[in-house]
Length: 150
Image (cartoon, rainbow, N blue to C red; front, side, top):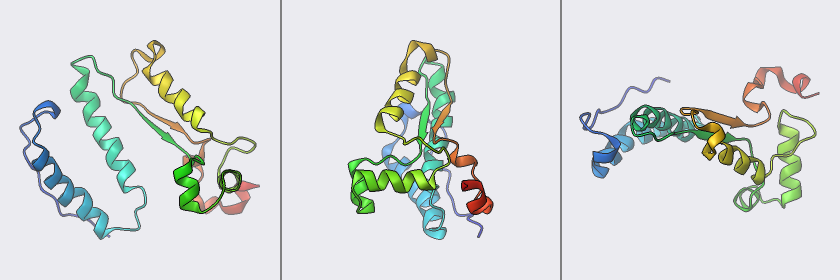
């Protein structure tokens, strides 16, 4: 499938001077329109967030503002366990079995530590980073199948 619909919106603006209605219209057509055309693309909103972060990195850097993102693997939070209709232990077991890094379970505190690092003075010159906290899951190609999981 090829998505080609899109509008430019007001291109002569910055994040500080942007018009909310114009921004919503552009997203409605460009992002949501593409989403409707390709519902199977489960990572559409995450990609949009990374694109926004990339643009903000460039735009906000001149004000000394760092922009970074954290992309975690599944965490058995109350929202996730409700959605999966599992208790915390069952959800963690399920995600661990589907994950890449054996013997470790991603906890909310792990994601918080990643965010704290990015907000700390240790990361004073880190901007534009997508810190992936997924135990290598994004490198696991689906064609590897069960053999990569053994």
